[in-house]
Image 1 (tube, helix red, strand yellow):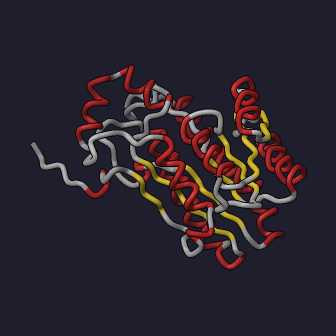
Image 2 (image 1 turned 30 degrees about the vertical axis):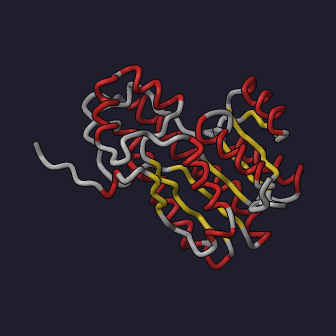
Length: 255
């Protein structure tokens, strides 16, 4: 057990699998009181029992439910110190702008961008009262670099998360609140596996471009979230925190 988050209260959305679950485990190991919000009530009950955390069933696109999630954290533990706004979707039918319909576009932006807006809006009043807090918004390498294999709605949403995080980080810096965008490259999660299974050739192309030669493990991205949540990153705000195995720094010569 560590003490990097001792006495802190953390809210993690999308905390029942992938990076969110890995972050919940790390945060608990470092002394935090954790409240997980997720749409999967069955998985949430199991995670709550395993980690001894509080679970709230929440649709992160619903403003009232998001407010209730953060209110539960405050009412249960007395503060809201960390918000890891991690929930996202990555539908297989989010493709080129020429093939992606308006319903997919709207659904992805609601789940991946509006949800982050709602979570920040819910967390900030508690943090302003406390004069401290760390908000980590899950963006993506796709917010920084264009992708040859387009997922237009996902990319647009993550670009919005990055811009919003930068804006909030600047706005609330003198209130003791840090806001950063976590930008991972490809991560080995259930969402990624679904993409790999649907198009193995595309997965191989993506893998070949990563200098480290592999996808990240959820624990590696969770470690970055832990750093941004802790006082070790006390002078970092309004940043894009890249964890991508060198992908953004590499050059692929033209064929």
